[in-house]
Length: 406
Image (tube, rainbow, N blue to C red):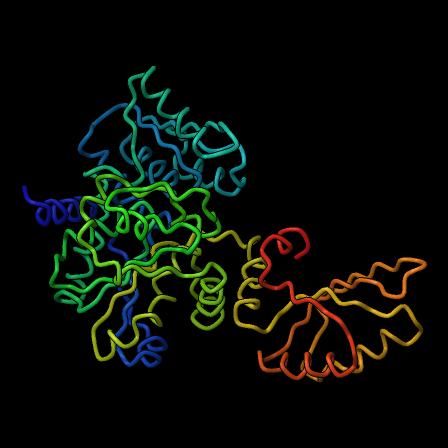
């Protein structure tokens, strides 16, 4: 059976387990980019991501009694869901540092069929423990992406897109982590459909593999976009993506992705995880290429922990330029703080203020966070600070300092 027929067979078999995810036209994005833009809403699957597709297809073919995976996120939940469906035993290895919410959701989807084991502080340790367990117990290891049956299962997203549109789209924008979804879509549609592949700046595994001609470990990675933060793309997935042009691979800053999460939540009422927002934010990077075209952006997942919302909002504000942090030298004299406050404009707000006064010093250091309504307000504010003789250092983009003080 060729790949296209295999993906179609996988999609047909899935209908006994869960319905096709919606493909919805988005008026806001269509008007913004002058294109016919549709969102493939994988965030509306039973486990709020596309990962259950690959797990289903691999498990229906393997027919094992015990399945094992190593994951702290969507793959774990997809495997757990399918273990319950097939009535088989699953052992899910997760790092000890996994948030309790993700552990609880995995247990909820798996029920009595799934055992969660917390091993290691880092994923490499977790993976090694899972593979060692498979060797000793004769269990079947389910890769999150580097498996031909998983790739075929993820390609069912493409089967549904073609069915729901009544034909192929002109352009697809897809996030890339380990490459299971992206390689599946590329293999299904072939070169006749233009594709853009999007990675977070902190984990450019596909871009580096293309640059070197083979999968390459890009550690250390930034794990913020956890659904796409993979240090090394799969060997099997890269074999299907190796012909991709480097110009078709886009990398997006993590803070920039946060701005899209906030906009989709506030304007559209759509809850997306960082990886789920990648393709939507990347539309601006291909705006010239998609004008007048029928475009599908893959909203790959919506497993967003709302405890992260303050951080996401913070990063979005910093990226958009409406929030900045400074170390300000404040003269230690009466009225100095009043002088500073008088410089602030009507749209400026103090979000953070920590003043360390030291005796026998002429100046004290102040950590100050300022919010405003539009980025250009900072031009006026900084000019006023210069005229008043204040000395300051902008630390907004200093990631090392930000980890400690922001």
